[in-house]
Image (cartoon, rainbow, N blue to C red; front, side, top):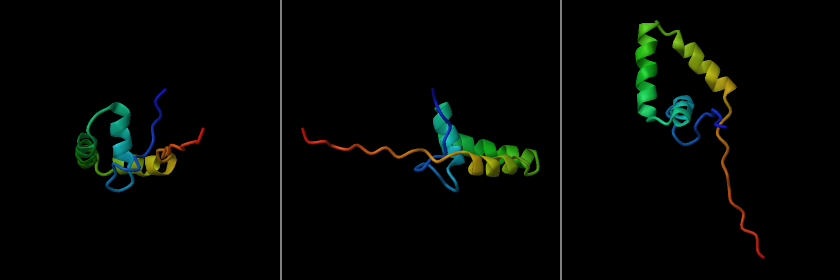
Length: 70
């Protein structure tokens, strides 16, 4: 099951668009451009959803490998 996270590496401001892009398997630039266009069309209202996603979405976990001597 895929989970939606904020990106820790592909981010310009908070990583929300990078996380959404990774979830849907598209380029993050497309998501960012769509957000800008939708924000102009709806007079800034989508920015509220962006800020809510920044608060609600956890940042993606950083996995580390640990080598164990056998």
